[in-house]
Amino acid sequence: MDEILKIEHLVKTFGTNEVLRDIDFTVSKGDVISIIGSSGSGKSTLLRCINMLEDATGGKILFHGKDILKGEVDEDKYRTKVGMVFQSFNLFNNYTVLDNCMIGQTHVLKRSKEEAREKALEYLSKVGMAQYIKAKPRQLSGGQKQRVAIARALAMDPEVLLFDEPTSALDPEMVGEVLDVMKNLAESGMTMLVVTHEMAFARDVSKRVIYMADGRIEEDDKPEIIFTSPKSPRTRDFLSRFNAKA
Image (cartoon, rainbow, N blue to C red; front, side, top):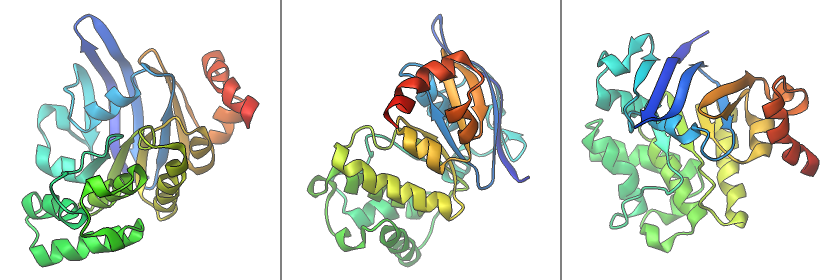
């Protein structure tokens, strides 16, 4: 199995508040892992630690066996390989859609403008946004902005894409278009770690589901087990509301 990330005994505290407690799991090539749990369970903090947007307090984050917390991997190179899609899009409002998808490539990867443009157009086409290349973010819907943000992340050729509640800032009618893009990515073999409240996506698209509670991993298993016969009473309780609707 081609292991990309290995998280060992990860801890994160804010003052006296322990937000992540002894987190252990691995991400292998082609994995689609959904992280679910109540608000405040540590899901987004976990992604932010993996992407080095937050400093972990303890433990290890191994990328192909090298500990990023010990500086064994160049931070900028690591961030291009472990991309992030945020719930609030984080697009540059004064840049066009095309420029938003080119700037990281030219500045960080040092690609030529021609190559960056080609890559940007490839991925904007993939997410259905090629006809909007001259638009500014303010002219787009939330779902369109998020699709541009996904194309921007893909244009950096990441090995893993982290999604931090990518649909939570969207109007309900726009959620489906973003989830469809993510489903297509999963089917194409993209390695994905997704913090989500979209339980149907977690159940139907993921290869694994991690349920977090109080900063810990309560359960980590195949979706069919998590959703039909979870071992933990806390997982069962959390999912009972979803299963009642399904």
